[in-house]
Image (cartoon, rainbow, N blue to C red; front, side, top):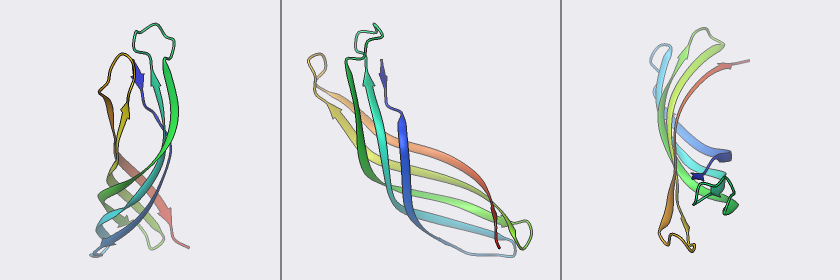
Amino acid sequence: MARCPLEDSVAVRGRIGYAADRWMPYVAAGVSFAEFKFDLDHDGTGDWDFQEKKSFTGWNIGAGVDYAMTDNLILRAEYRFTDFGRKSFGNDWDDNSKIKLRTNDIRLGIAYKF
């Protein structure tokens, strides 16, 4: 059994959109930073044979839409794909262990403009 949970992540992104009435569709892209924790139990006994935390830098791209419900309240829906590359493991039982580090997120939000 292998686990690879995303521990922490940060993204720096730019976005460009076009406002039409109260709607603003947009696309966004940027750089992402994350820390993953890798756990491996190759024989299923419950004892971890391998554990490691590692930081990665990757890229992200996405698209979304903002809707101004009022002049101050904005709703947002967005899809984001992030790719941190691959992590390879060399060990005694499997020389070709590779994990693709990718995330697909759907985000919903509310913002208040002052």
